[in-house]
Length: 53
Image (cartoon, rainbow, N blue to C red; front, side):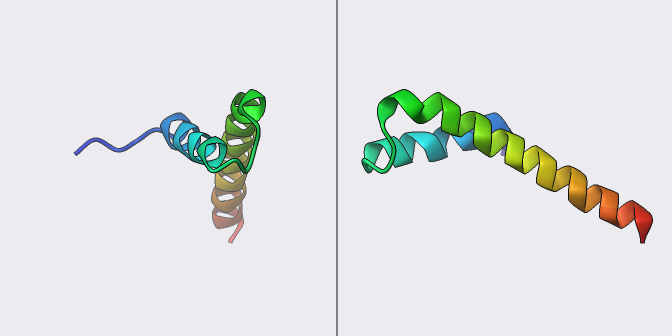
């Protein structure tokens, strides 16, 4: 079983939010970028905290 990339996961989340009329269609790509950026920043913070402990 292949693991999904962060980009694939964020695309699924943004498509679901569009389908449920939570966000407009024209903001789908923007939301995907926000999800990817937040996830990467969170991962770096967790890794950084682990290195300093």
